[in-house]
Length: 291
Image 1 (cartoon, rainbow, N blue to C red):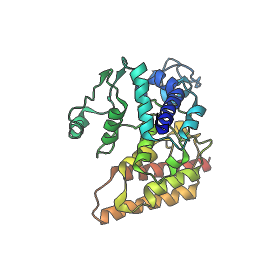
Image 2: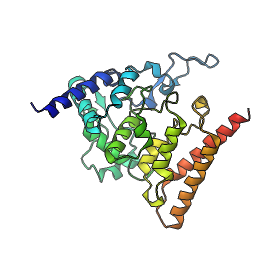
Image 3: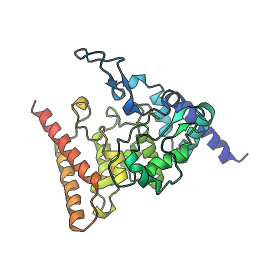
Image 4: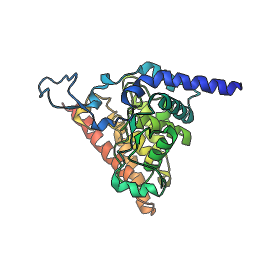
């Protein structure tokens, strides 16, 4: 047997070993629809009130250190990830439900221009890793409003995204891997990943790109997440950007928006959302210093 094939089989088995507990626990689950009352720490509130799954990551199975180690391997590519997920699903999830209900009915007609025979509603045994991934990849590359990207739970919330996927620059395959991770709930780990890493990411994704080369999908999946520029009170313990750095990047994003307008380049909603998010994050940082 060809040595390359042997290595690939071994890589697939390693991936399955690392991610099997998370996939088995959360396959086909839209985490934005999950509510629970388990393990609440806020004793002042009604303990019968459902709490978002985002805040109870201890309920998610899997070893984040093992998963982080696999993601850091140089051999890891999106096609190997999808192959491993496909092998796992055919063996362990062939009779389990999967759908793309995060895609709204309003968007379905536009999507069918690209995937005319694809069944958004899914069903039992619907999942095919590559086809489902490509469906979501194209969906989030179209113009228009989109649901939050992290609707699946393919990755343990404490698993570390490799720094190079946050910082860039990215090949198309690296963007696809980052998309798979963000779609599957991977977060930036503020304990181990510093603001310098994030700064390089926004520079390569936006502020050091020419105005006419901005990528809405990249902005959405990397920067328009609560772990990059936190704005919600619930995330007040997340890492705070240095005030001066936030101010500088805010100005640079606004300059890009202005240059696109003057140059007759089509409006990119993600840039405007990014500008607002940085503004709120900046205001939050100022408020924290004034306490």
